[in-house]
Length: 268
Image (tube, rainbow, N blue to C red):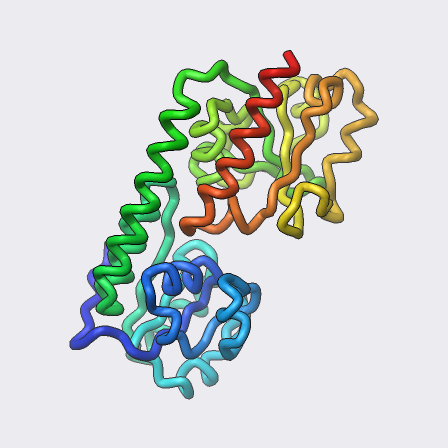
């Protein structure tokens, strides 16, 4: 809801969120990045940029010393107190917070405008829209699959329908069994999950393949054989960066989830 105006295209950019770093690279502005936060690891070139803290604790002195003419933040990911202090530096701040799959191309186009890379941004946005439409057409009208996404095991946490992960679930023809709960990240009991009895359960892995298991995995649910997802072997892992970061790569994660759901339908 805020207007960000620059006298000229940004030349020195600090990104205080990993997804913001990806978006800047996606619109052709990677060479303008002079500072990023931890976990800004994609693309590879991002790993060589100076670190200025993480999502929750930013070194404001280091940011100011880099003399940026634009700072990219995550409205709901960076600590609000930190964002307020950034405002005191007098540096333009662009808040990035795509909440739906359809929000990402607009985020690309707006960053491209600020960086003066409108052509590259328009191309990236167009490719994304085409890829998203292809997935929508491929999985439109597929039989629904009741789905549970595990954010954390102890305590048990998931995401509701306001999160982009649920947008991915819907894209694939799935139904988030806890989508109507509040808040954005509801805490559940084991009994609630057993009662919901989803057909498909998935979680984020720490690596790029489904063989990379997180420490807090889905394997513990195997002691509840009456769970439909356990009975049918429908426990799945996906690289968390591909579904939790609102960047063009989310469609790579969506494609993997959609393929997994097709397997679920085939095992009915």
